[in-house]
Amino acid sequence: MTTKAFIFDLDGVIVDTAKYHFLAWKKIANELGFEFTHENNELLKGVSRIRSLDIILELGKIKASQEDKNRWLIQKNEDYLSYLVDMDESEILPGVMPILKYLKERNQLIALGSASKNARPILEKTGTLAYFDGIVDGNDVSNAKPDPEVFLLAARLLHTKPEDSIVFEDSVAGIQAANIGGMISVGIGEAATLHEAKYIFKDFTLMDKTFIDNLIK
Image (cartoon, rainbow, N blue to C red; front, side, top):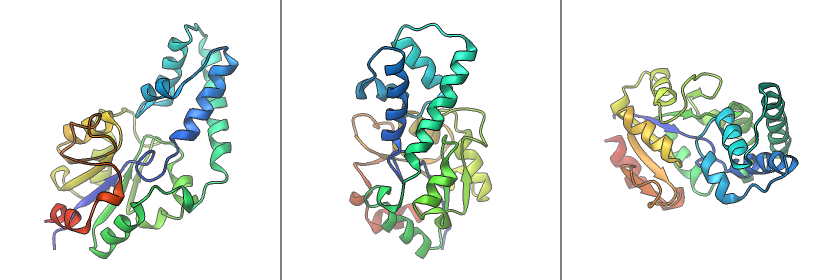
């Protein structure tokens, strides 16, 4: 049987930690005297923490020193981590576990390819760490998506060629990264947003075993 590498993004694919990022950024924006909305938050999808702060400061028309920026970046991460303390398996998005289990049954390789620097603790808290044969997170990469670095590193970690790798992503930048890396891209979310993906599913509950079997072939 063929062995492929199935590479999962974390936020918005396995768990929804996006809501915690939103709350942490919203708190900073409020302290700086302006409102940060869910619409604004869309601009931060798949974007690094440093770039996210720059976008927020642009939204609030705020000029800041590097010292202030560093302080806010630390505060944002501390607030975000405080929200993660109570995470458990109930945070796993619908349909994810059956797919992870089926991939294991079929002896397929599974990796995480995420910009999050907190990926390991999140996988531990949700009880999913054991499913992953390799983890590439924000501590391992220097280039943000749409650069394919995170996924290429994950494929290399699993000794798999890019063309034998399948990426599950919920962001436009992530889909572009998978495509640039020569991998099969599977969008998880809205078709209108993720139209560059080879395959698109609203969520994992709509993905069946036949689809996975076809990817393995």
